[in-house]
Image (cartoon, rainbow, N blue to C red):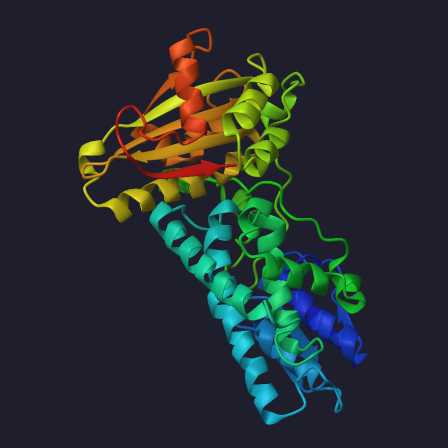
Length: 415
């Protein structure tokens, strides 16, 4: 019998063995019309994997589950494959990077991804910890790739295939260019791998996420409502998908963001962000002047924000982490916003103040709904006809020090 893979067409864990099959010239057929939450709940499927997770590979000798195990199996079907290395030490290094890709990269990405698919409750401290761990892992990978084209040796191995598939979800669903730009060697590695013919044949054209998927609420039906439903209706409800490695990664079509429906603006926010980033000298004459020339008060609005609980900011690094976490959670608004956050003071308690440019005349409602930090600040719309307020905007953009008579501990930019 042919090898048959049970997985959705867009499941990145299924991609692993399909790509390995391309390299080894092995035929692996993807089961047609697989539907997560239905196909994996049938008695036939549960017999292959009692947990009901995907992918599962049917072989002449019995089924195999767990995506890395399946990829290893397909890799070893070819006796002279180069995917498993040419020596014992290379094999050890391949296994090392497979574990790294799974435990340090994939697990942290999944923690951030599941609440955005409505498959887990959104817990900001958990996400913040996952993002921090992911950045550390990407930093370590970036350092290694600074002097290595591939993870092991001088050609693609099983480690590269699994790493690329795990990074695939991050690059296409979670990590925007502004996030990955801190890891240029990881970027080079990923785009090199996804354009390898055998990988591209499975993944197709890959495009990086322009914005982070918004958080989806996880709602449960009250028990009383469940009891009132007729039994015949309950029987029609599709079984709930099992969460885990078998998650089908195709999100439901998102409704258009209301900000995309606003009349066109003469201000191109990305052009301002580039000007800000590229101006290294004569900041007032170039960047500040350019900002006001670009700024469209009909299409955008300016806002000051002041942290409500500055008396709690008694430890500098905790205050800086608090602001950093806020900016990470604002990533969902990156397409529509630019911000500066100042941490002010040479000693505790430290003050936190900010300036934000938002698309539209009000703070976007989806930002207020999804980013819990918003309620921790007092927000005040800037009156650009007031020269004093306008000058304050200038000073916050350029990180002027002292600011309002006090030293700057740090200044962070959201762009």
